[in-house]
Amino acid sequence: IEDALAKSWIAWKANAVNLNPGSPENAGTDLEKVGEWISRHGFDAREIMDEGHTGAARRASLCIWLEELGISDSHQLRALDDRDLEQIAQKVYKEKKLYPPTFGKMELRDGRNGEPFDKPITVGNLYMMKLIHLVGDKVHARSTGPYSLITQQPLGGKAQFGGQRLGEMEVWALEAHGAAHTLQEMLTIKSDDVMGRAKAYESLVKGEDIRQLGIPESTKVLFMELRSFGFAVELLSEGENVSI
Image (cartoon, rainbow, N blue to C red; front, side, top):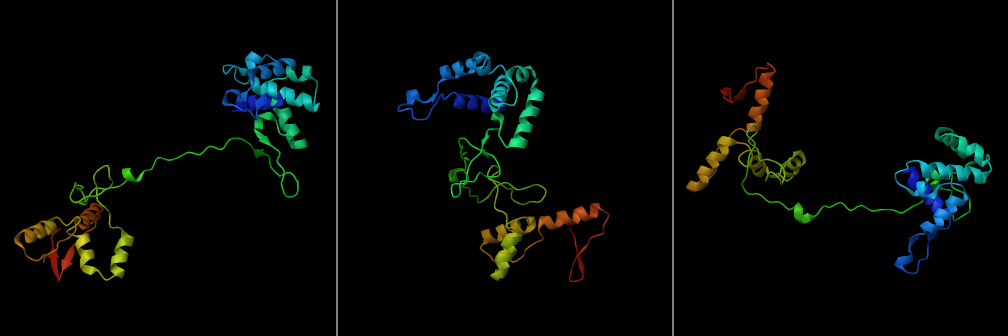
């Protein structure tokens, strides 16, 4: 990233960026002008512009930047290793608030009063990423479908051809409307009441009213989990034990 920022800074300094191309053919950066500018400053343009020479553009931009500020002469700067060069650039930034080319930031001023902002601002192209979420991929409906072997409840998700879950807040909504029978039906024979839904189907076939509702399978699963912890859990109905 620092190499890319350094190359961008070099192109701007060389006045090689065509801001008003007039035609698409003239848009972009004049690499020939960039090469001439780099060569005038005593660096190998081919090496700096080559993607294989990592760090070359970064080092060249820092050296040229420090030389233009008069921090030191070119012979002393170019004899330093990358770490020392970076330390000098950081020191100049902290003391003089001048931003090295590898920061990719610029000092911008407030348009109302002309005062510079407190922090350097990143200047560049803004890219927008579009997430591919289409309604056509999300529409899903189910009448009958697969059930979980453990809970005997419909599976969840379109990929598994699942049903819709009646959650806690949906239960509150039905309770608020006083729809007790609808709520009981949704939590039992429409969901995980195995015996109840079998008897409900039998009643529908015979044209009779649905009278008997059983115990949801999720209740049995809860009891089994409690028993696995060593709790002696029993279900009583009018004083009589109910087998689960």
